Length: 278
Image 1 (cartoon, rainbow, N blue to C red):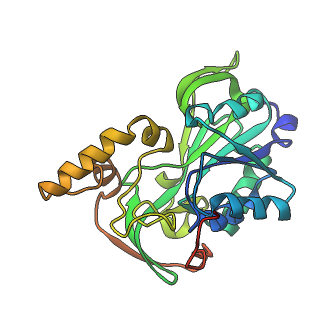
Image 2 (cartoon, helix red, strand yellow):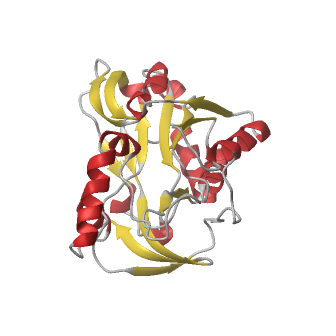
């Protein structure tokens, strides 16, 4: 990409939600300053999520809402951005980004600093407990990274995803040899990282979640495996086994449990009690 095009890059935030009313407002508000556009895809939420995202959209013109019946089609609205000068930034309802540092980092993206990079990953804390501005959990690395930030200007096509920005077939533009990836976490610890996130994977995300909440599957996996997951969890309870999916525990609970004090994330849980609209 030439330098002129690189300096015209924009950022599209895309938020896929399903029953996220406890933290979705915070998740969206923290990324609004760093995005030129925000697309929120709501998949059949039955808690207060729909009301909250409608309030956000009414207050901010850069937000666009779409209702989707099938999460496997959540990538389709992004296909129109393929080949254009956009970084596409996937955010979930349990992902709280540092609002100040992300703005500064994305400014460097717009200026073309990483114009030849296809995917960027930052630092993550997989959180299992929150006490004010103190967070307990497991860092990535060494745990699994989950940032979703892609340079769509390098693509000729990207289709067939089972969920937004997951899987599918990618075809690079002519002249782009490889899908270069950058891990910010290779050079920065969480405390000083310019691109970092609290992943509230082990916390309740919805006012409808039970007290014995366990980490969720991806939305597409929830739909395709709904009954098998319920049966598996029922059997695991009977035999006294951990109810959370082994994959979640293995991927996110890696290394030592850390305690991090940091007020930069402006994490605020939606006030309770919340009641879903009739």
